[in-house]
Image 1: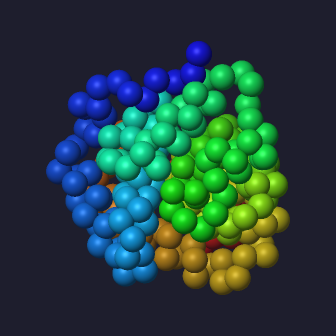
Image 2 (image 1 turned 135 degrees about the vertical axis):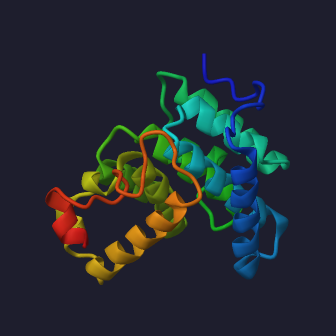
Length: 212
């Protein structure tokens, strides 16, 4: 039957002031490297989706929130299709995703693809999602980066594969930077179940020693 993302958007963003700041920040940072309006709107889409994922939003809530900040059909039509797929038992293969969502460098051909992959594989191992994204071909690094950020927001650093983290360049430095960014974000909002010492970047456990 699919997921209806055309429902009432009121209340999807529980802190309108915060999400307005998120939108402003996404637009400002995107304009540094993306002059085209589609590039800016794509950045807002991903930032909004990430914020709702951080609040433990359902897949439907994430898609509806993303759709509510998009004006262009290049995004809204793809989001509607992603919702249909996520609500169906018949999941599309890489070829159909390439044809209908895209796998290119343009924001309209990568942002929704990344969001779909992150939501589809949210309960699966990180490596499984990345293998699927690799099979999409095209702009794998961009799509993988966005999907990885969304997946990581939902699952936390402790769910990342230890073997892969060990191969990451300057893993310790990246871990410290991630924690500082997370602690900074926690001063702006404290979503349910998430705090500056929450699960997004652990302070203890098997992954913490690797990431600190």
